[in-house]
Length: 495
Picture 1 (cartoon, one colour):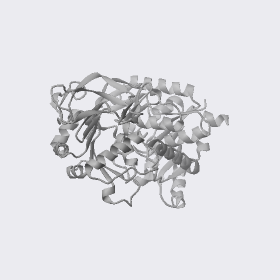
Picture 2 (cartoon, rainbow, N blue to C red):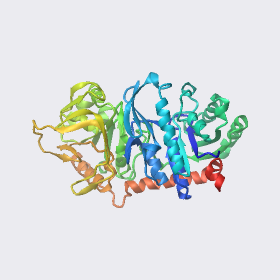
Picture 3 (cartoon, rainbow, N blue to C red):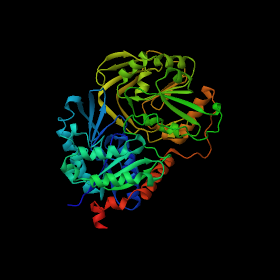
Picture 4 (tube, helix red, strand yellow):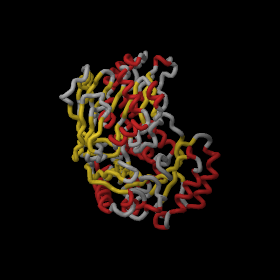
């Protein structure tokens, strides 16, 4: 039977699997092929709400690349790490208990069944399913019970493409080592190597590629160059902090806006600040340095998968004191979701962190109570007549107004609160609304004493993402033998 899809695996996490899948989805969609992305299991605290529940953020963007509606079938199992030894399980978009570290290798049969059923749904609906693996297929300690890498490929007869990041170094050893560690049955499905992030003259690399193919029998289908202007919503925290300085680098220091984002231990949905980093003249830095947080024009407390635990970490590392000092001095602070919850008077959590009642930072007039049922919503609204659309909510913590105390100058802000220059909202994705983002940043800049102003004619966030996906697809069309990959599938068999 001809393969209904293709699996893009990697020599390691962050090798470029997500980027290659997104690029293939856009390139194939441009050819008129009805294509869908798929990742059987994602371990990530970066997620998104789609029409039928919660999925990994990377699969959401891959669906946009494929020009199809994102659904939970594209990421049927999502594991959200809560501690080093426990993950919260999301199956088909809804909470489904926890998974302990000791259960990871053998306690996932029901998750495998859900993943395989979702793949069958997609393969029946779409011409081709472009699958993304997880980590590396050579993690032989996890091969028993695997359903996201070679277990998926064996179940559905999928050809496997292994992507390696040459910028990390040791690319030839990584590719050969991946092949060498596989058993014979798995090796038969390994049909292609692709190298990512290459800089230089490909002819210098080619002798090594020929030797790897001679030893393994696996051909190379492409060498993708380093693409400076390509970014993708990351599935984990490996990419957090990789934002480059935005454009308008000729601006003076006072004409720029410096944004510090606290790298929380359980940071979640950090993609909220991608839109800030895309704004010309706005520099975003992810940090745990109290001095950097204190010096920034704007300090952001992002989402967290462990609000009470990360709040304790803030206190232990002196960062809570920085937040309080900034608030007292009228210097801007933004909290999003878990970060907003930390700014509350009090947090009661017998669900996520099971810590009972703990004091918050006391900067916004709200009390947070964690509920067993997770809120998944797609809200919309306005701020000073600027529409805010495309926002989403993913949280157990429910913020209730504190009616027993008055906060000076407190006013509603995106279903949260603003008091002085302390801002808090449960809404993720709000800053992707261009007019709102620019107006809000302009107010923050004035409060911070920055001369930053929005750049007239700057591209919208949506346009920037579309341009990125088109650039990525162009690069794959030029540097990857897409026809050769398709020839291994039912799409190629029909052409």
